[in-house]
Image (tube, rainbow, N blue to C red):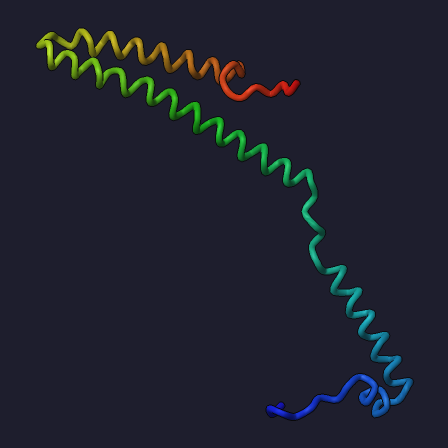
Amino acid sequence: MAKGEKTHDRSAADRELGGSETARLNVRLARLSEALDQRQPPPESSDAGRSSRQSFDAANLGFRVLIEFVTAVVVPPIVGWQIDAWLGTAPAFLVVFLFLGMAAGLLNVYRIAVGQVGPKRDAK
């Protein structure tokens, strides 16, 4: 269609086609519209959104446990190793801090599993 060329309005198209032809086209259009509505996927239910949210929360909890345990097991031995280097002692502080870190890591994981750490879920 060239610029400036006017399109025919609906009433002009109806006059050209005639009443019966317009009625048939409207019926076909209605059937097509119904077929398209049936082919569209149903809107996502709230159960699917809830399941997705629960999966996200579980992954978040898993990463939190992993980070807290690894941090508790890795950082204290590094501190113990540095103390041993400053004092010139054998790996005594390294071993002590390793065991303290492991204990702290396991305690953190236990607290998370039991639910003692984190935001309070009881709203009063």
